[in-house]
Length: 208
Image (tube, rainbow, N blue to C red):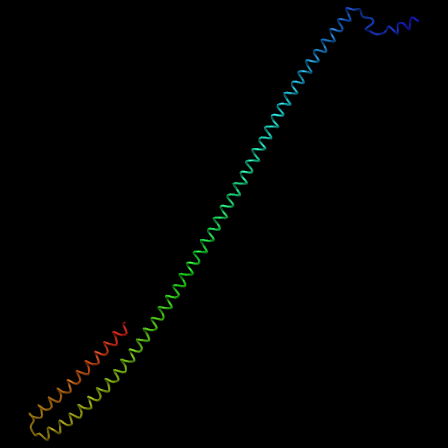
């Protein structure tokens, strides 16, 4: 029975008196208070760390948003630059096409001017050929007239000899011969004047 009682009364708290129990309770409360203070401090530290992490997350989120906005702005800027470059290239193409068209028109005008000039030159050459043919024909006529005059002069010379023989007077024959030569010279001068006048008229027509 005694052993059973010792086993039953074997709890440490039952062996303590009231003062010791109060002291133990006080110590446990002090320890609990310290643990609570440590827990509060840890909790506060955790909250501060959590707040800092939340701040960091917000900063990271803000940074990501700003970077996203900047990237969007960059994309818009790049797109705008591409559009402006495309517009400039289109303008360059239009300018080049316009220059090519103007050059083509100028070349066509030059071709027309050259063709017109060639035609005018050909017409002038044809007129020159006609003038040369006319002059040649007139020269041929002049040669015929000269041959005729030479024949007349020859006939006159023969007639002179006959007249000298018939007249028997050298002075009278000389006067008659002089008149004949004067008449022949006037006819020849008049013919040459006519030929020169006609030649000058043909040259003026060809120049016009």
